[in-house]
Length: 378
Image (cartoon, rainbow, N blue to C red; front, top):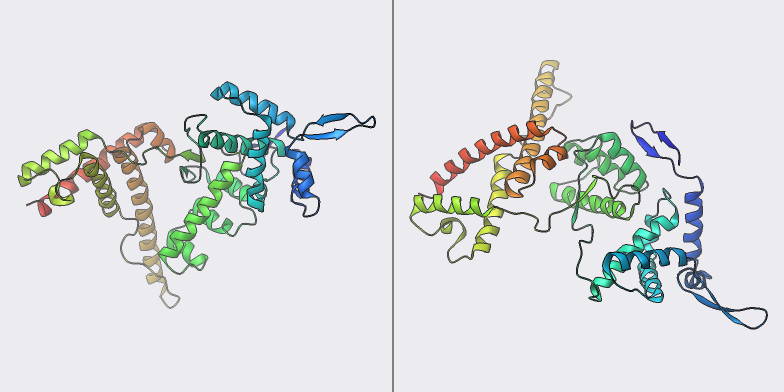
C-alpha cells in the first residue's frame, strides 16, 4: 500500500479507493428493510442449499474465512473451543444491536469492511466468553476504562483524527477547539454559545465519549497513544505517604491519625480513599484552572487601556494553562504514581524537565500542606 505525506506534516496510509464503496454496499444490504433479514442470515450463518440433482449441500456464510481464522486465534489465545454457530450468532447480535445496526455507522472506510468487522467480532466474542465463564475476565477496552491523550499530541495529528472520525458530528467543532486550537474554556463556551460551565462540562464529556467510541472501533488509530487505558484502580496513594501523613497529624494533634479531617473509626481503605479525595481537592485549589477575575476588552476602551487589558489577559491565560499542566503532572506522579517517563511523554517534555518540574511542584505542595495543617490541626 502506498504512503503519502498529508498536509498535516506526517505520513498516513492512503486507503484503497474501493474500501468505502465496498463497505457501504455491505452495510446497505445488511440494513435493507425488505431483503436485509435474508441477506444477514446468509452473511453471518451457514445455509443449506439443494443442487440440481436434489442433493443437499452446505453453503458457507460470507464471514466463513474470518470466522475460521478467529476461532483458531481464540483457541490459541484462550484455549477455548468456540462453535462456528455460536461465533456467528454473537457477531450477528453485536452488529444487529437490537435492530438499530448502530455499530455499522462507525465504519469510516479507512480499511476493508472485513478488517473493521474483525475488531468488532473479537470484542463481542471475548465479552461473550467472559459472560459464559469460559475465560477469566480480561482487560476489555471501553469508553469508560480509557482516556484521551490528545493534549500531548501534535495539533495537526489531532486535527487529522477528529476530521477523520468526527466528520459531520455535532461535536466536531468543540473537539477541534479543545485539541487543535487549544482555546481556553471561556472562549470555547463563547464561540459555541454554551451558557454555563456545567453545560460545557456535559457537552465536552459527551463529545469525548463519542470520539473514544469511534477510536475503539477504528482500525487505524485505536492502537496508538491517542487513546490510553486507565489504570485498573484509577488512583493509588502509596501506603508510605498515608503513614507519614498520619504520623505527622498524630504528632500535631495527639489524636487518631487523620480523624480530625476524615472522621473516626475508619478502616485503612477508607482512610486511603478519603486521602485521595482530599489530595484532588487540595491540588485543585493549589493550582486553580481559573485565575483572578475575567478580563474583558471593550470597544469603548482607549488604545492604552486595551493594550494593558490584552497583556493582562495573555498573562492570565498563560498562568491558567501552566496551572492546568502543573496540576496534571503533580497528580499523575504523586497521587497516581505514574512513571515519570510516561508523564513526560504525556505533556510532550523530556524526562529531565519533568523530574525537575515535579520536584519543584512537590516543594510547593509540602509547604502548602504544612500551612494547611497549622490552621486546621491545632
